[in-house]
Amino acid sequence: MNRYILRASAFALVLLVALLLNAARVQVFEADDYTGNPANRRPVMARYSQPRGDILVGGRPVTGSRDSGERLRYERTYTQGPLYAPVTGYASQTYGTTLLENAGDDVLSGTDPRLAPLPLWTDITREQQPGGDVVTTIDAAAQQAAFEGLGGKKGAVAAVEPRTGKILALASTPSYDPNELAGTGPSVTGAWSRLTGGGDQPMVNRALRQTYPPGSTFKVVTAAAALDHRKVTGLDAATDTPDPYPLPGTSTQLTNEADGCENASLRHAFEGSCNTVFAHLGVDVGLRDLAATAENFGFNDEDLKIPSRAARSNFDTDMDQAQVALSAIGQYNTSATPLQMAMVAAAVADDGEVRSPYLVDRMTDAHGGTVSATRQKTLHRAMSRGTARHLRELMTGVVTRGTGTGAAIDGATVGGKTGTAQHGVDNKGTPYAWFISWAQQDGADDPAVAVAVVVEDAAANRADISGGGSAAPIARAVMRAALR
Image (cartoon, rainbow, N blue to C red):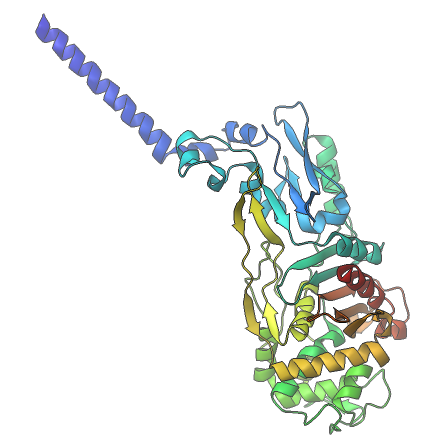
C-alpha cells in the first residue's frame, strides 16, 4: 500500500512541478505575447484605470484627467488645448498618442519601470505605478504671443534659447482641441473625420513637421558660406554681380525686387535682400561647400528629435550651377521647417554653434523626483566665430535700417532676416512670408531668444511681405515675451 501511495505522491509532485514550470514559462517568457494580444483587454483597462500624469508648462499642468465612469475610466483633458496642441499632441483612447503624449507615454501612464520603488519591481509584480509628469521647456508667455500673433492665419512659429537649445515656443495654426479626441464613441470619431478631412489640416504641426521653401531667410546660410570660404573680402566691398544676373547655362535672367543691387556689397545686398548677389555668391562658393554649410546648420538631418521627430529640412547635393544659384536664395528644392530656421538664427546668435533643440527639460515621478533629464549638447559648428559676428552685424542692420524694421524692440538689440518664398505653379501662389530673428536685452551677456515665423496665406501685397509686414511683428511679440 505504501508503495502505491509513494508512487501517487511522486506523480502528483511531478504534475505540480510541471504546472509551476509552465506557469513560470507563461509569466516570464510569454507574458509580452499575451499582454500584446489584441484580444487581451486587461492592459488597456489597466492603462486607463488611474489618472494620467501631466505635461507642465512653467511649472503648471496644461493637461489633466477626467473620471468618465466607463470601463476605460480616465480620459485625458487639456487646458487651453489649441494653444498647446503642437506641444502636447493628443492622448486618445481611440487613436493613440502623438508628440509629447507619445514620447513621454510610459512615464505619463505609470508603466515606466523607472517609476517603481525598486529595480525589477514592475517586471515581478506587474504593478502599475502612479503616472509621472513631463516638464517642458516652453515659456508660457512666448507661446501665447506666438499663437495670438498668428491669429487665424495658416502658419507657424518656433522659438529657441540660443545658448542651450531649449524650445521656448512651438505654435501652429490653425490648431485643434485635443479634448475632442480624448475618449471613445461617435463624438470622437466624428471629430477625427472633421479634423483630418478638411483642407486646413489643423492637426499638421507646421512648426515641426511641415517644410517650406525658406526664400531669402536662407541667405543667412549663403552669407555664412561666402564669408567662411572667403568669397567676399569684406562686408562693404563691392561684389562683381550684374543686375539682372544670368543663371549659368541658361537664358534666364534673375532679377531683384530691391534697388541698387548691381555690384552691391554684402551689407547692402543683405539689408535689401538682393537675389542676384546671393545667387552669384552661391555659385562662387560651389555646391559642395554650400551643401556642407547647410548641413552644418542642420539641413538633410534625418534624425532630429526634440524628442518627437522633426521633418527633414532639405538642401540638394546634386545640382547644376543654375539650380545652385536658385538654392542659394532659398528656392528650387530647398525646404525647411520653422524649427530649422530658428536653429539658423540661433546659430548666428550663439557664435556659430548649433545646439540640439529640445522640448523636455525633465521627467519626474508622481512625487516630483527626477526620472530623467535632458542634457544640453552641440550638434555642429555652422560657421566660424568671426563669421557669426559679421552675420550678427548684418542681421542687426536689417532691423535698424533694412527690410525688418517691424521687429525692433526698445531696450534690446534685434537681428533679423525677412524672406519671401515663391511657390505654386509658375510661382503664382501668394508668397509665404518668413522672418527669422534673435534678440538680446541691453546689458545681457547673450541673446535670449531666436525665432522663426512663417505665414502661409499672407494677405498683403508682395512689397509688404518682403518688408516683414506679415511675419516680423509676430516675431517681435514672441521676442518681447521671451525677454520679459
